[in-house]
Length: 326
Image 1 (cartoon, rainbow, N blue to C red):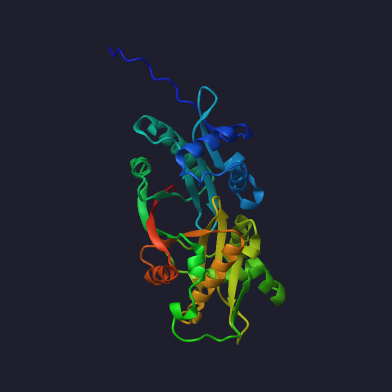
Image 2: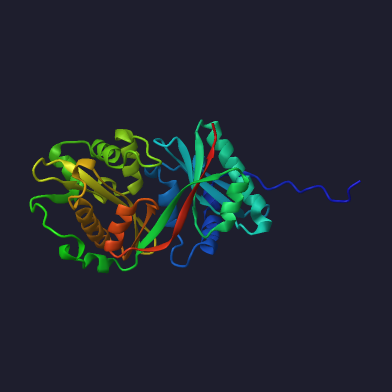
């Protein structure tokens, strides 16, 4: 007969409450690099603002501590084009003694995602974060892609590059880059429909892409906060049609994140990527950014070449791990 005491029931995983906010901010402050910790404003913008499509009453799960604190949390949101629940944040203390906390959070997240009919659950994990990878592998998640994380540490250095530094030859002086908002207004198009068409043609065929259409683009614009003002489009002078785009978001600590850049296949190798990068970096600087980060597919050599020309350098890797739910 075993002399071991019966296990103590684990504190429950439940939905986020407003009263959890101080504990969550404290947890993130202990687990993120100095200077990059979100404050209350950034937290509410990321998780609590309906325009971002992430409602914590439905998508933010916390593991409560018996004493009233929070041991960890997992944040999920859905991108319709992937039929996937994305978990960019899984934040328990992942020392061995706290692994049960991580498993409890993941188990609840998987149950919630399956209950809603989502097809898979995907997490992005820093390449150096071995503990999270172990926890995810133990639950059946498998690596589906590796991205390189690149950084432009001094945005002003990227802005100082001239055309001669970047590419030979000149482009049509009448061609231009403008905000998606101004282009759509001038053409009397819907910004979401314009971006949706560009996304579908410029990024179609990439490893995790599904057609966006107007609905998917509407969600993307909402998550930017600034909407169509934080997306630039390249406009061909002869046709007055949008041939490419660049979109970004702002993060704490004077940092911008380059979310996506793409050029329609018919307009590639004509310098549009360079022009979009120059215009995008200038706009980020105007908004107060001092450095820029991005993630790029490890197999996308043309994009990596472009970023390096602007002064970006590798700072790590991001690994995508996924679990099929259907």
